[in-house]
Amino acid sequence: MSKHQYAMVMDLNKCLGCHTCTLACKKQWTDGDGMAYMYWNNVETRPGQGYPRNFDRMGGGFDVRGNLRPSKLPPLEDYGEALEYDYGQRLFGGSKKPVMPHVLADYGPNFDEDMGGDDTRNPYHFYLPRICNHCTHPACLEACPRKAIYKRAEDGIVLVDQERCRGYRHCIRACPYKKLYFNVVESMSQKCIFCYPRLEKGRPNACAAQCPGRLRFVGILDDQESPVHKLVVQHKVALGLLPQRGTGPNVYYVPPFLPPKAGHPRATVSQDPRLPVKVLERLFGPRVMDVVRSLEGELRRAQRGSRSEVLDLLIGRNDSVRYALRPDIMKRSASGK
Ligand code: SF4
Ligand code: SF4
Ligand code: SF4
Ligand code: F3S
Image (tube, rainbow, N blue to C red; front, side):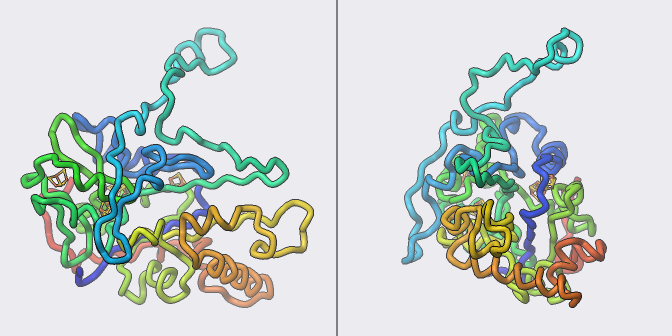
């Protein structure tokens, strides 16, 4: 167990699917050799298959007895390749349609972008940004026979020791979120570092800082003044992804809150949800509808003119409270970019 735990909360109701977070991370951390396919931060569309494809159906994590569950090592085809657009033709060749010479690629990051659910009267979609969850019980750490993965005692950030790693890839198999990536050039696994060199300097994670939707909150879970403590611990309106996998994820989501179904204008969201409950429960666990009801209650309170601390936080009434960074508790590192 770590002494403190850094965490991130993402409000899925505000995500624009703009991928600025992905680019911010890529530019800062994964533009080296062997890293082209790595998206330490990726943004998926639901319904959709995710990145790598069907990662959430591959197993991994722990069973009820605390043993590692079997899982698949995703082949490269499940990561696909980014579709390339011929911008020269689009902009200067007189074509009115985007030209995609590489349409033969049958998968890629965010392949399912903006595809709605199949109920045409009540379509839905939402974006799901994902990073490593810096889990309380990291399956990746447990699976590595080289003990090359460690969880920092002072802030709970999970890192791969690049000197110790020998490229066994048991960690990738064990992670239920498939948030480690194998670098074939370096022959080792690499993953999100929660931007610890930035946090140590008092600067928020690159993916959070650049997000135009301002939906990411960062802080220490046990710091009562931090927005993550308020949303996760105090008000309980944010949940981890795939909690049934037993790793104790420390990235939390305020679940998407779509209007009720067409033809039921007076129904509350929880009475007649447009977004299938089974979809939400599969991703965020059995408590998700309690959270939706709680958010409805906060909305009603605000509509009556009362103050709602939850909504004040989520809509960013006071933007200075989005981050509660604690460089004082973090170990100083000389390796910061
Ligand atoms: Fe390890 Fe995966 Fe958890 Fe990250 S999300 S700490 S890679 S088990
Ligand atoms: Fe990338 Fe930093 Fe965000 Fe992790 S926290 S996904 S390293 S930008
Ligand atoms: Fe969503 Fe923010 Fe990422 Fe844009 S930058 S996709 S709004 S999380
Ligand atoms: Fe261990 Fe994964 Fe490296 S299992 S040796 S950290 S590739």
